Length: 207
Image 1 (cartoon, rainbow, N blue to C red):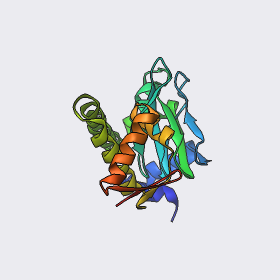
Image 2: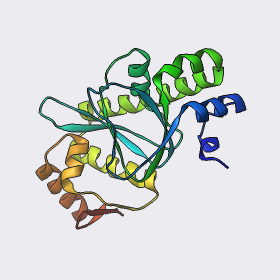
Image 3: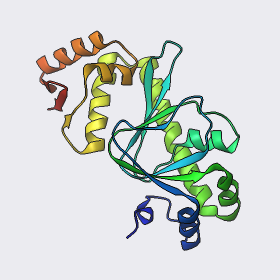
């Protein structure tokens, strides 16, 4: 079975699948490969067929914060809206592992939207999911302490990968959460002392 048939929740008709295959371009990304850069022109809308892609926003001091992670079956709704209204990208998207992405040209979006109601339903479901995730980010930044945010992040990544160990540096963790490395290191040591995690070089295991 083709990977496109496995795109969860899209469940398009054979006509839509055929159209996506004909108009889209399949691209393979390695871990760390850039899918989309901030301020760049949006020419394609990605659908994640395999793997995962992290979406970040950067402030004026070049500090990054993770907004959400795109998984199999997802598309980037911010890219979709930017492409639809001929706007530049407001986010940076980076592959978190080896991933396969189907790139749909923005000029095809109007045709898909007009011809296929199930495509519209898919976009609205993704929009709803992304909106809820962004609300969680706002809630975490505004109301939660950093130790709680850090533990929530580690837990969510473990659930996402299915691996109890997370291979990441303290610097990378700090960038994901929009804080300083020394803060992350101190909190991780505290969490290890409390028996919540086990630390190794560039590796965190959730206990």
